Length: 69
Image 1: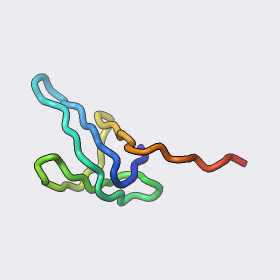
Image 2 (image 1 turned 180 degrees about the horizontal axis):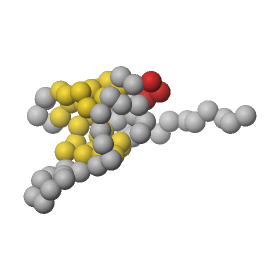
Image 3 (image 1 turned 135 degrees about the vertical axis):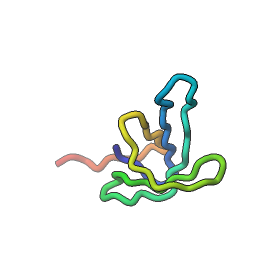
Image 4 (image 1 turned 135 degrees about the horizontal axis):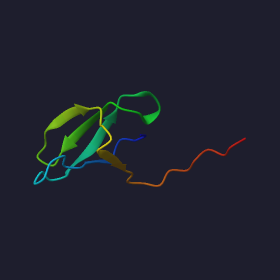
């Protein structure tokens, strides 16, 4: 899982009736875009998260990949 500041983190609800949660990634603390991430939820609360397999990073911009050699 690779992310950059400004991307969105979508965490799917784990139980019936639990809604998906969306947060903006404010800061990436791992090397090379890896977790943990500091995120801000829509209500303004910030948390430090190491997302599990129920989470997806939604990139906000298309980034160029470096050419392979």
